[in-house]
Length: 146
Image 1 (cartoon, rainbow, N blue to C red):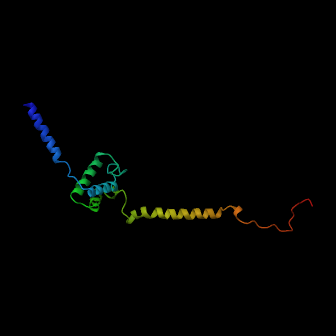
Image 2 (image 1 turned 60 degrees about the vertical axis):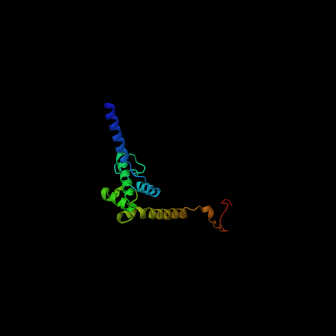
Image 3 (image 1 turned 30 degrees about the horizontal axis):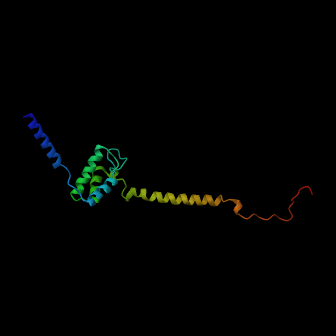
């Protein structure tokens, strides 16, 4: 009798596990999932993307993204939902608006200023060997003992 109850319990648990397995997704949906996971930072430590990070919270985010894609949500809708939940810090790449615009503009400005500084330094410290030397006047004393 105990064996029968044990087998029945195992069968019920196995059926429950199969019933909870996520539905198969299309290749396009899998691609959306991978892109979104690369756009979100793991909310446990905010250091790596969800695609790279291995933690229980990252696993939860991955499952939530998968469920949203399975329901037909777009990338924008998914990202907006996570921004509403965690704030803009969840995004791996900030939105180019407001203060975040500096993240896009500042590197270009710094590169331009750096190139101008280097060009000025090179121009000032150009080797004198490349410039023609001035001829000596003919009346100069070449030998002081004459």
